[in-house]
Length: 150
Image 1 (cartoon, rainbow, N blue to C red):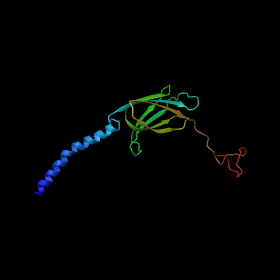
Image 2: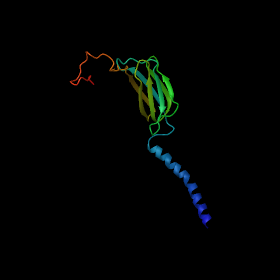
Image 3: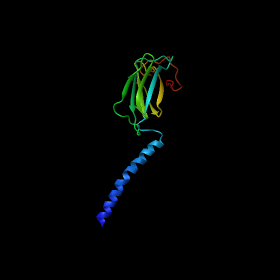
Image 4: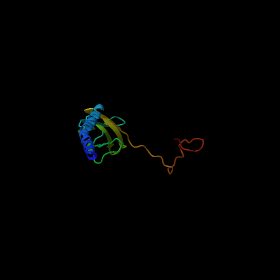
């Protein structure tokens, strides 16, 4: 009799598996995100000062998981003469975007992709001068303690 109960219990578990996976699919629909949905991204990369386009900037795309870790691999794009680049087929979810260009600071940010068409505008800044304690700063103003301004 114990074997029969165990067999019935095993059959009940196996029959309930499709219902459990259907619930998981319904949960994804509640989030308004179809796991197979893809978006078309377009980028405009400009200089921070003057708003001129940045030619041949490298735009790198990485998928990001729920823990904030980026996936291996990724996609690398280059901007055209108008500072534009585009890519189709990006799955919905979080994506990390990095932009690199010679003579500019590297840009990086995470974006949530949740609509079919996304336009992203990025302004790149020139590198800032670095302060060195080894340089001669005798002509600079200092606070009452003799420290350079912050």
